Length: 326
Image 1 (cartoon, rainbow, N blue to C red):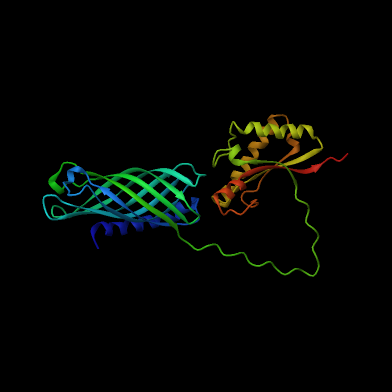
Image 2 (cartoon, helix red, strand yellow):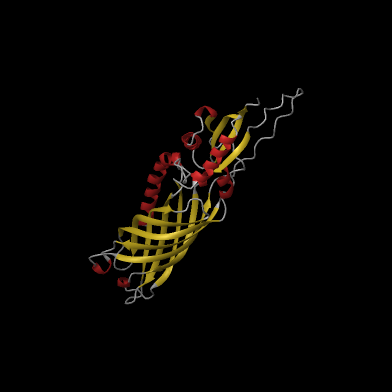
């Protein structure tokens, strides 16, 4: 086993020790594995025969927030020297962090940064040095399990032994790959219990929903601060409540999708419902007519099986709990 990959194994142990702490704030269902391939353009000072050659890699990682992912990556590329009949090979192990934009889109651009150790195997040097990378990329989510990825990375290899240089080399990597989510598919729900001999009483009717606000219209992602554009829709609710004083008790209910922990989603739904209630009372609606309640992820309108469905489940509803029929 070569030096870089022995260090890669050590990095994997450290990565694994950090997982229990980080995973408490996860926003994705699975870890993923990501093979990749592409081309590497060597630094002009490497004095290689061809400027371009193959690049390959394999990584494992996951999202730890809706925007940030972290991978442990093993990769490598090689070039032929001009002056001698020999090759130089770079093999590396390191961590790659990516900050993704547009969290509600299937296609997401991102910035990346990477650090690690890179081993050099050639007739001039068989050592290892640190490397650092920056780059850009784009990821397209095909399904809940499969995503495509394309990225351009500039890597500075701090190799000073080859050609006895005072500084290292900067190579450029253009890489295509895909993420495949690991883990088993959720088991089917158990069959319903047999119907009892005595029929239970009919359930109480569902509250009458008089207004439903899409949370993406009212709030930024993962926020409970009302957007400026939300006020026009909320003013319509104020007009309706002012016109119907017979609605003497109205629930302001917050709902979320299943992204995030149950406890976090419960708190977010409560804060969003309170923000809407505060606006209604500031516009003249009596606080005695409003009941604020957060339902978290317990009452989805549709199954949380896609980006579009999750957007529908993020909402705030106004429901009539009690009317004055006099």
